[in-house]
Picture 1 (cartoon, rainbow, N blue to C red):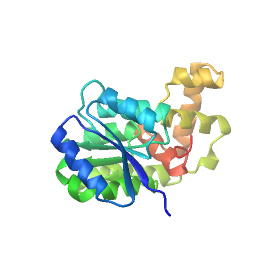
Picture 2 (picture 1 turned 45 degrees about the horizontal axis):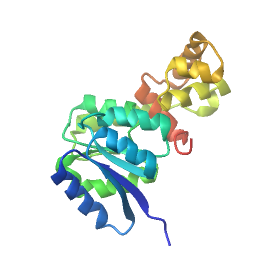
Picture 3 (picture 1 turned 90 degrees about the vertical axis):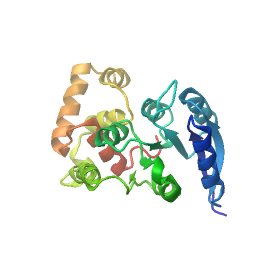
Picture 4 (picture 1 turned 60 degrees about the vertical axis):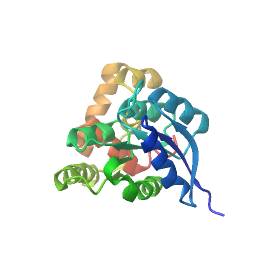
Amino acid sequence: MKQKIRVVLADDHPVVLAGLRNLIEAEIDLDLVGEAINGQAALTTIQEKKPDVAVVDISMPEINGIELAKRLARELPDVRVLVLTLFEERSFVMRALAAGVKGYVLKRSAAENLVHAIRAVMQGKLYIDPSLTDEIRQSVTKVDDKCQQGSNARELTEREASVLKFLARGLTIKEIAGRLELSAKTVDTYKARASEKLHLKSRADIIRFASAQGWLENV
């Protein structure tokens, strides 16, 4: 029997949370293992349950969804974070991607898209709500394209690859320097060289490239 996808839900609106619960419980391949009504409770629940997918609202008290995603990328990178939000602006989408989010779903289309998004991120795909404007989706696609056109991990030295992996997981230059026992300046140089080789212009680009390489799947 195929193992179910274990899901944690986090939203500070009880009515929304109830609706999400109904969506998950209606699917035979999904297993709701925890719920939370604020960011801190969500972090605790996710740390305890270690779900496959965490569906979190961006606008939660105590810890918002973006900050939660950043922390999970460092502490529990196997958990795929999918944000659920009212925000349709490009800036929010890119911030979410830079934080390590695997899926971006609008609340107004959750009934149609959430379950599909959960399954998509479990397959290692990036899911962006189809209700978003073409301009936003194209900008995200361009990040994908830049990460793949002439971009091969084999072009990197071992140190360059290590630095990119740590950056994609949310570590700072200083933290990476400590782990690799290098100076911050040397780490920054490795980052610059790797980014130049792969045409990566931002942290979001680095995260997308790392995800495409499978670096964030089992770390």
